[in-house]
Length: 265
Image (cartoon, rainbow, N blue to C red; front, side, top):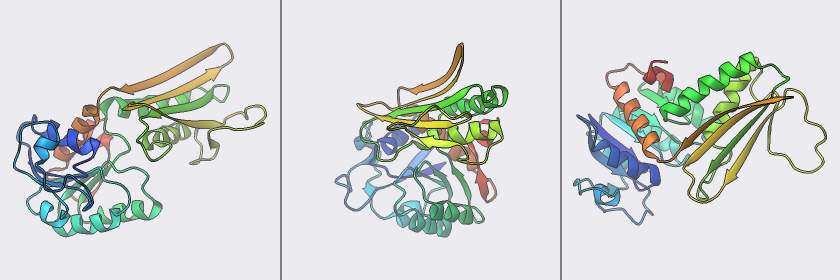
């Protein structure tokens, strides 16, 4: 299977390239980043800390997609509309790990899925996708006497907050409670907030150091507390999940697929 990586010079892009070389019947045929990237023209294998693979990091996405069966896109949300147009024209399957996508970007992904198979997930880790289900099912069982707090922590380079995974966790517990999206959700607290309203769902973001990604869902009641936690110690967990998702899309009809489809959950 021929793979093109968009965002190849980023942290995730490098791990995708390194992990792909270890997967059977998978080959990197394209590596792309923005024109201003200082690594343009460098061997993508060398940049990723492995042996040279002969695929140079380029700034021409259209050319890089020509021989690809699928593109794994972890580039920034800016420019997602133009990238989608290229993927549609190239008729390639797409795995999106891009976070902080606007409503316009989300609508464009849905539109593109009518022509090509697409997976857009906030997190590709197998463990995190299990956490989504655990959080939803726990919220179904534990009533409003259990306060829900969601805490995420990432490295100090991360630009968006809260993380896409934390937002998805909030959506999962809202579904479990039978709530509308963001019906009782808040982000952080400051000042004299008064007593905690019953049923409130709070999301908190921490940033520091080189933390790859920690997520905890807390259910706290009088007399007991339940915590569901996932901690990622390496980006390889996300990279391997994204590569697995790309392989899943091989031969699939146009449409939007999820990690639950990939994992058979």
